[in-house]
Length: 76
Length: 332
Image 1 (cartoon, one colour):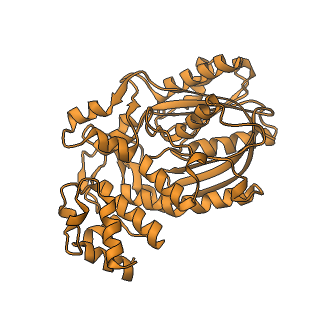
Image 2 (cartoon, rainbow over the protein chains, first blue to last red):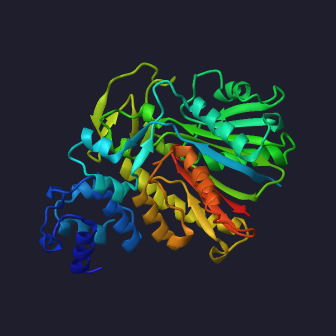
Image 3 (tube, rainbow over the protein chains, first blue to last red):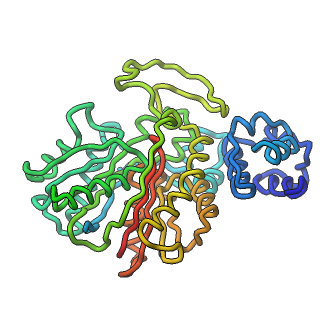
């Protein structure tokens, strides 16, 4: 998945945030609507799109959407 | 051969709506609970109402709806993690309260979200082994008694309730082959840590987990991320395995009733398993996650809607605390 496709998929997980606000540099855990349920959405995205497993601990260790993308592509 | 002859359920009278929860947790929204968790309201047992009480009422409903005499029952299986007493066994009390003959066997077994499947496996085994002819399988849970009042996540998900099922040598659906599994190494992912023998005294300990959640040792703790990952890992191969074990291909399965954990988790599993929406039971709106009773409640609701015709094949699957999982197939 390209970084642009990932950003679009990530923005799609959110309910209240304008997708145009999401970039590779977005500090996603600081979004107003970010919650424990958002972590589960990321787990589901990684499983369905990459067939990989990511833990909440690993998600929380990433700061930006770009960090998360790189982690999943390289490690997860 | 063993069959399901009857199924029913009972929910306690007290109802907690999403509006009730929002009054306590104003930072939350009704829409968010409804859209993510899929629950609009949940039933909660009263202060003096136990899992044994709920199980008794479910059994009485079953007897009334199907014209079953208690004298027919020769074995009682009760699945609960909220027994009335440490000892004696709640199923023994239910033998007496339900007027079941003293010649019947009775026992509790301690499982949660996989419990209905294990109960069907045990009942089938008792019948196949010639031990019993009419097994009353009861599932009853009052998790709300274990949940801390400030734990909005678990309070939004879990409802209390009980289900009853009669497993006999004849009935409307034959119970097929089973696939079961257990991973006790992950026992801390869903736990009430104190009160039993390992840590008998309450500790009042609270500390953060690695997900930013809070572990309260004296109350129900669920590590949402780990349980979610467990489910995504275990359930798709479980469904494949039980399909093959019963001599079927996926195309031959008419319907799926999984443990109703929460809407988001079920939708994700459904997508991974590539199950069409119209073959997949999803209804937590009025009852929430009733732990071991969700599969039988789903089965009863489907029967009431006349969803199943003779010849249809339905996969049942349960998964959760233990960690424990299991699946079987019903042939109508």
